[in-house]
Length: 562
Image (cartoon, rainbow, N blue to C red; front, side):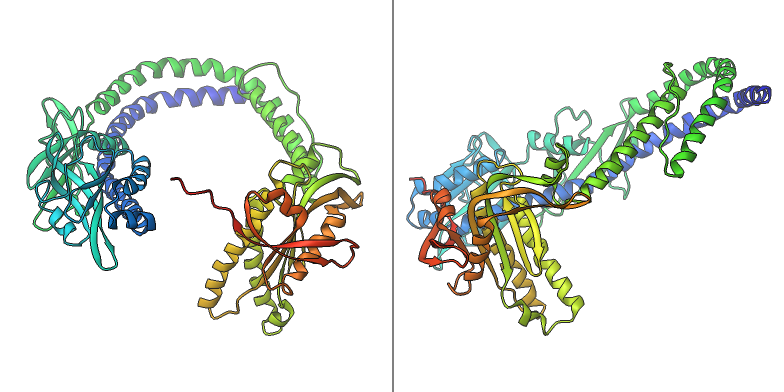
């Protein structure tokens, strides 16, 4: 123990002189690093704003294309129906609350308007000469001068002409005023003051920009002193918004004076504390030396036991120092390992989150409960014939692609995949714990499986592979849900007549020339929400009573608002 004390004392004393020199050097390096970080941050403003503007343009263009292609909107524009156009314009205005949404007729006159507090009176040349391109049937984007309601300024415009049957019926535009408010929005994103120049003239600055005249067109951000303050700044071109013959520049600047002063103040503070801390370290070293040996020995022995597969705890001290915390954390780690092994053993018997959570909340034992569920069966049609022409590895990859999409459809709608049976899937909605909406969730899952399968087949066709055809059968009823098998190896599943009926219905899809068949029992639970066609009453193998089956088309669409 004496050697430990002597070594700790010599170590503390040896650190005094180098620590002082090191503190000075580190302070200078910290100051340089802080300033370098500030300039690098300003350097990255270009990429950040370019990304922001690209996202802006992409989202705006996509929104306008969707609006432009909307049948009701096109009909309203063709008929000069302002109220008909206003509905979709108002919806678009809610999505983009900070952008002016302007729909005009073929002459540029206002037809519908959203967020129009500062909107121009029209899309005619009087509001902006650039609007003549739009009224000529051309797409319009970029930064253009605009006569807003409260005065002249510049705005970012994304606009599309509305052409119906080859005839120009008007245009729809998204306009964002490039003013102090928008530069404040960009400035918050990049943490910098901004100033916008058009052809060399400042047209907008962010709030609180005390030095809007700063310009630096160097490749990297530079530092410049102005009015006794230090600024990191860079000027770059906004090529994404430039129009022919136009030069747009944005200067980003940050006041880094505080960073420099903070670094220097930190140096003085560090030197003042360094002596006291190092002297106190001598006394602390002796106390630590006495406890290190016993604590390390206990933890080392327990770690050796864990390595051999035997979990062991170390004595805990009521003290609140690091060694006591280390002992408590070590014991917490051991308890966590024990719990992990218990969970691993339990999860090894189950394969779905819902089932696992249900099992972990109660004692694991054989048996089950009677619960109302909706059972879904899906099977690939003619899979045997399909697989005869494919090597085993390709069959496995083929099935994995199919199962991935189908399982995601089930899980996205709160279903549980009960099992895979060759190329078939059995899923359950309502077990282990029934919830409202299980029946409708099962229907939604089936429709999602149909949609995903269609997307898969597009990829298969593009790759020259055969397409998959699948049948899906759904039935609602009571089943016994629980653990079956042996106490050492069990499976959570459901059994009952509802399972048999769902399986039989899936088998009838090919005979009935449809892909999704639902039973009458299920239809009665979801008829208000689905579009389904009654097919016929059939006698399902294994049941005495005939069952009415329905072809599932889609979910019912809500009635259109007047």
